[in-house]
Amino acid sequence: MAKHPKYQFEVLRSKKNGKFYWHLKAPNNRLIAWSGQGYVEKESCEEGLELVKKYARGAPAYDWSKEGIFRLIDPGEFEESFAKEAPELP
Image 1: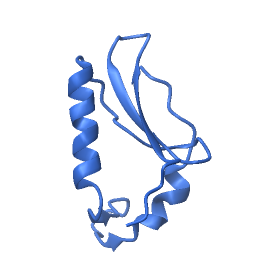
Image 2: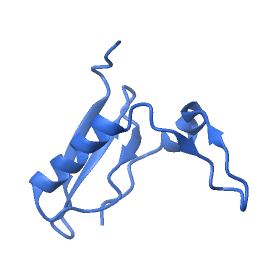
Image 3: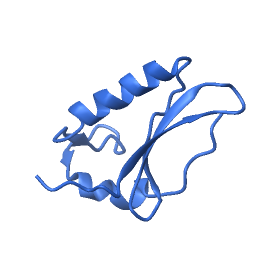
Image 4: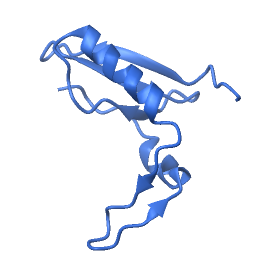
């Protein structure tokens, strides 16, 4: 299995609410995934990050954007939409 050392996870702490968040960045430094929720404890954030690393590979992706129509989609379809700038931390 090829590894991509330039892809990296980061754990950050919000200056606004003191909570911890994780980000996954691509080699071009663009954000491709984030925790979405804040964690009070850094250890909890790191545990959530480890779960993503462990279980996300090979997980199916569903297109829920069309009401009443559900289909399995190729994760590559999301590449463009998720490769965007990091959202501002709360």
